[in-house]
Image 1 (cartoon, rainbow, N blue to C red):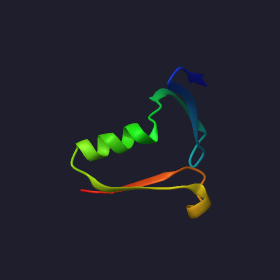
Image 2 (cartoon, rainbow, N blue to C red):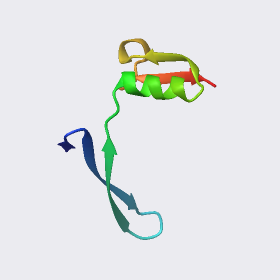
Image 3 (cartoon, rainbow, N blue to C red):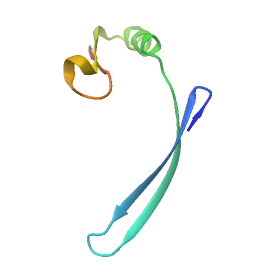
Image 4 (cartoon, one colour):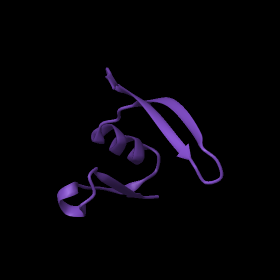
Length: 68
């Protein structure tokens, strides 16, 4: 669920190897735009920041690579 620039997520992990155990984790992420992440990478000593998009990779989210 989005809340401004933050995303709240509830994750359930089901472990049924030896016995049934269900764990619930609630966390909140701050959304970072591509431009902001690129700037953070560059300002922290990375170079060659390259974004690859789903059309190119087949993965459903953009992928960023950088060299340090």
